[in-house]
Length: 296
Image (cartoon, rainbow, N blue to C red):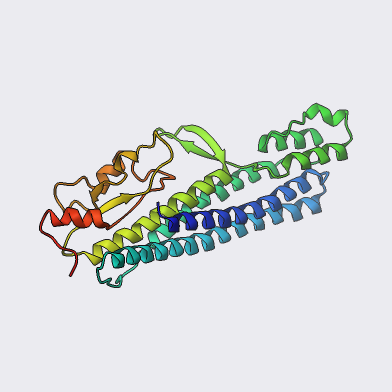
């Protein structure tokens, strides 16, 4: 994929992880405050309310991020196509309409899987009897394997255990996101931060490609819909490798070429895929064989 999209992916990944990790540390701190409350009713109420606010704040930040990230990716995708088309000696026309609301909603809904999982775990945790230290340790182990046994409550000072818990939680993502098979069964779980990274890379690339498609189809409305697949995968078993450098049809309008949709069913543009597409000299040559000229 182009250097431009790689830069956007890296920037957005860093921004998203910064948002998540900041709130994660605050949530973990509050979880430990509850563990150390001794069942004090007033303190429990304060810390539980704080957790609710932190999760709500994270949802709000995810919404703001998803909107800004999609807009930036789309804008960069349009600009990239303009540069490429202009470099071919073709006069660039302005894109008449931009439709990205659906992608923004998809991005946000995926991010909400993180806050939904956090909410579920936290709701279960706050039902703990915090006056019973054995149950507190068990509840913390349900959140994340701490390495501390419930029996240690009887043999070690509580403050010493709390220090060990704090150390265990430090720089650790205690929340995971489930992946399901077609039957709805959980096949694996990944750290929420890993899931967020995947989202940032994948949806950034999808938006960039949507901008490319919109620009190309509007630019060459009457000529055709051919594009060259750009980028080189570093993974030898990647399903998209057979399409690298190939000329495909965006919509099927130009007969005799594999469509992008057909290629996608065979693995092109999979999650984390680094490939994009554009009108290139190879595309110009393909059109010339059909006696079609893109250049005025």
